[in-house]
Length: 118
Image 1 (tube, one colour):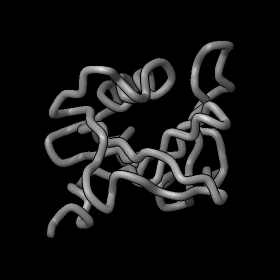
Image 2 (image 1 turned 90 degrees about the vertical axis):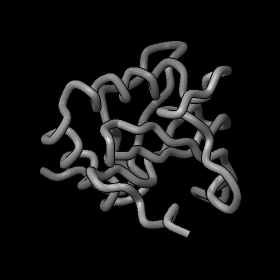
Image 3 (image 1 turned 45 degrees about the vertical axis):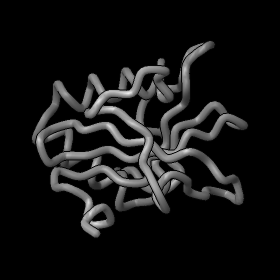
């Protein structure tokens, strides 16, 4: 069965860690493509999402998005939007929902997202 919108991207989060879910079916499909292309890097990104989705020290590979992409809305909740560079072109975008201790994956893909090509 293929994952879709609202589905969990992993087993339930243990106490003190973040739940990871897909915001839509496209994100779930992109996740599967990332897993096929860069299994180890995608796993490392998953670990970061679980434990430290909003790092104090941002890096070029893991940072908050800027401008109109800095926030997103999911289920009427406005959240910060972050990015993890999984591969040279592969990206993971997610919303940090502090009310639910959940990271909502809004984009996962093996290619650079077009939304940043402005």
